[in-house]
Length: 359
Ligand code: SF4
Image (cartoon, rainbow, N blue to C red):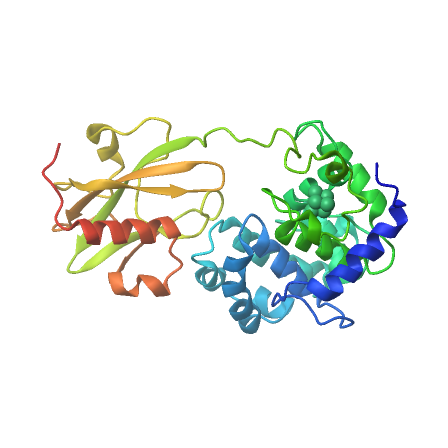
């Protein structure tokens, strides 16, 4: 088995990081202190979203709202509009609510204590540890999927995930150094993203190759064990595309829950079975000759996929008032805080042309 002492590991990966670190817009140049606000925004954006996607949104966001104060003063609808397209909108809601709390409770300075950070909406153990390490130089260890993979291999932990998670966290935390902890955690993140990748890790390029138990045992492709995922659950919904004089009807979703606060097409609930026409129609925004648009739209949400059928109608008479409703020109949709699903539904309805006869 490899004989490198564990205390050599942080130095090895930090040297590697100094030469190979990814150039990301939220990273400071070496030696330049990080702005806690920017670190926090980037970590919230990066939750379950690809780095390449976050790259596009991060710059314009912090340019528009460069501080806690600026973000707290912004109308939430505007924040959602900027977030639109990145998905998982509850994060934007939480970020905005948290900015107001930071202003109120901490005078606009992000707290540097785990408990106070975790008291903010949207900040869990991972984000708190990432902010503590990267923004405040604390020896905290944010363990995400990259960390789990790297450490399951480094220590050749054969228990399958998620059971092995506790042991991985414990072992990972033993290595986090007191010197440059922020660079260290970003180095592990980079190692997992570029070298110790899920399939065919590039061990020859790895700074920990001489310390890695999985490599010594030829297990690097087999670990971590038990990460195979079953099929994602699928849910069904029917959305209603109401047109009036060239405009379409959108409805703002409630401020809490799935796609909170976003504009969406009026729709049924999401459920496990497909909807029959007669079951869906009571949820239509008004009585009309609703006709089914050909095909369906599939969309991946955080924990499940949804398949949405579209029913379309022209509004010709009086329509019940609903304070959450808004009629917009389809070409103006890009300027609104529209969910990605709503954008897909509008594009689908436009591409499929005339609705087919009612079933
Ligand atoms: S040697 Fe290979 S398996 Fe081990 S940590 Fe490095 S890339 Fe991952």
